[in-house]
Length: 135
Length: 389
Ligand SMILES: [Zn+2]
Image (cartoon, rainbow over all chains, first blue to last red):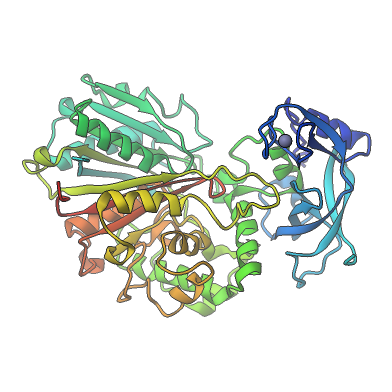
């Protein structure tokens, strides 16, 4: 069996993945204007390069979701069908991850979720989401 | 003002069977397009190449010049704007011939993802490398364009309440057109019942919501309107063109799954062509997934945001409908050669070569290309008639 695809940190995302390994969900926070984001070297709001990494709470809402029914990769052969969600964290950034604990026929977009940091392979971590009650 | 027309069309492969390499197919298509125009290969003085995102420069790149044996190039470039590359190249060619940088420019796309007998999902599942936060796609199991556009479609459905029957209407219209196109891969009848019963690829996308990958190449030749008048085949004039690249981040306040660059591209192109949306007689869209057709109809103002499902539901874009869309079957039932699939069908229709599927009115065609996650968009407004100059 082929092993799962692993995270491929680059310079911009290395702190994010290092954070996951320590059990923390880190996002970028602009030291100039306070905006939160992910995946940009520059503040999306004020274009400052002075960005810090801060811990996000991990709560958010499903922005978009799919149930994957096709085996595109042999490592997922035993997992189909499985859900994947693009989640809008309460702080603002959207994050992609697996989605656990949802029923086959329920509406996913708009659901409240929390982020769980999963060890998807030895020493490799990725965010997954689980539904929670509305606040 | 633009002074440019498409005068040659070359199509090679268009098959799910193994073929020669993408480069060999591209060279054949360029030479076929030149012959179609009535030009000698040595008269081609511009070559603009684009390739699939997963293919390499070694597979198809500047080396195409030597593969096609084109000794007299004054313009040579490989362009990359994801799925928008083909039209982006034709736009560059139109400006080049208008201003005299070159006089006869070949624009080509080729791909051979199925060359080793690979299935569609093997070919496209993880073809593009993903680094950084983008690598979370693959760790989460979101593979292929299907995964990406399933996410986008889920957002659209949640926002506007589009139904499976409306998505099905897009697939069924494409198939009805493909049935009349000898070059289309899938030509058996497709009913709503069959559509709804087809297997999920990535929910909410079913099998028939997804493109038909092939091995193949398509090339066109662009020259000036004056020179076009002396060539072998009827000219297809480029009246307008535009691009849109919203650069939306994955961030609250942005709608990357629903918006896109079509509205901006359309505003530029329609103003250049001095037309309005009501002047468009037929459309050739980049329909790698049914949802992109719905998105594009809304982006160009054929209907209001959220109303495309209703717009297509009564056969309006199907044969006999008021607005013919993807009249060769598009990517869905025809063949997926990215941005060149819609371009080739527009040329066929505007020349009057559509045979059984020929549209009755072809004064103005809108042709669109879509790239990334609605990140890159390009369009052309084409006509068999010269624009007002
Ligand atoms: Zn800032």
